[in-house]
Length: 38
Image 1: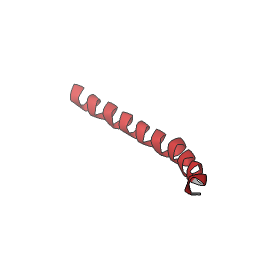
Image 2: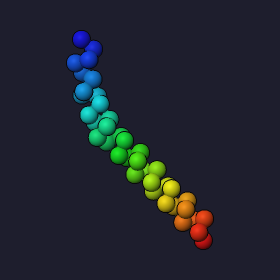
Image 3: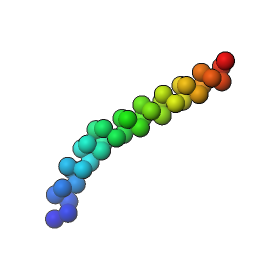
Image 4: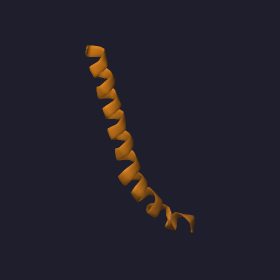
C-alpha cells in the first residue's frame, strides 16, 4: 500500500533535487579551485 505513492515522490526528487545539488557542488568546487590558483 505504501509503495504505490513512492514513485511520485522519487521522480521529482531525483529529477530536480539531485541535479541541483550536483550543479551547486560542482560550481562551489570550481569557484574554490579558482581562488586557490590566484
